[in-house]
Image (cartoon, rainbow, N blue to C red; front, top):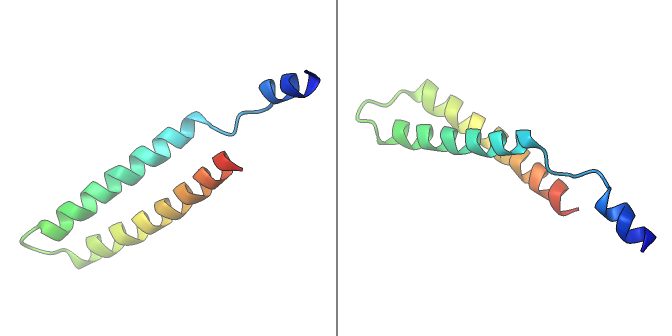
Length: 69
């Protein structure tokens, strides 16, 4: 019984900022897809978007692993 109370009152691993991280990742993905579909390619923007998407995907992965641990 005491253990169940400790779990119920324990700190949550989910934060409100996590939702914004996922939304920003989706927004970057949509932007990168639009850049790749554009008839005139901007190589700098595509590279910057790809690196940004990679950073956000890695941070999202770490965030989800933290939720599950």
